[in-house]
Length: 114
Image (cartoon, rainbow, N blue to C red; front, side, top):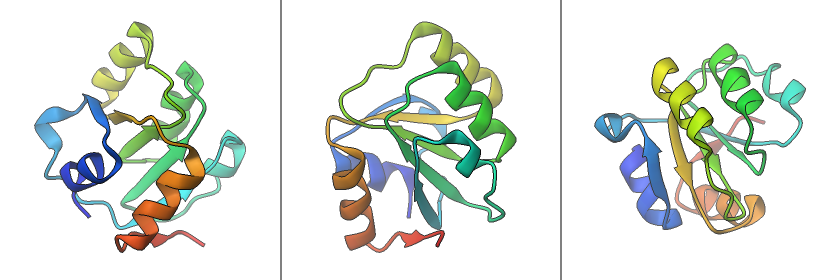
């Protein structure tokens, strides 16, 4: 599924990576426990989380995640935006909950990691 389609479906705001909206992801994973994210061993993953911290960006980079959806109406800080831009991470802010975002993406055909 293309990032542009994900952002449109979720009514999201693409904060970083606007030049990469044609990037495709194959799998979705929802977590607020970042140690769970580090166990992923698949490529083309979209992370859906309510954690809006620098550690989220660092963890996504280590796990080679393409895109992070920040849920529950949380706003990316300038420091997060800067780090995401430097690491090439796509960030999307959405108003809906992690659960709703996950359900919408699953219904649209995004495969779960597990």
